[in-house]
Image 1 (cartoon, one colour):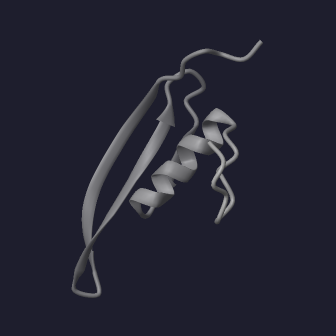
Image 2 (cartoon, rainbow, N blue to C red):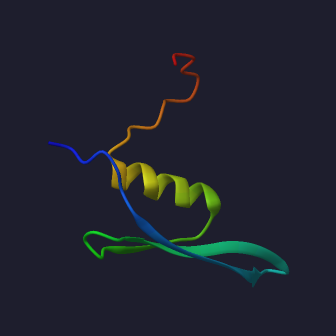
Length: 64
């Protein structure tokens, strides 16, 4: 039976790269302790979708 809720520990920070600031961070599953790093805010969303088993919509998909 799938879990109805998830808990995560999120650490985010900005780093300077090539003269511009970028977001980096880590996402830790509070239940399993699995920690994964990301290098952008879209990367964070991809990680959350992966942890939750969500399949992101394909580009151009207008269904809801």
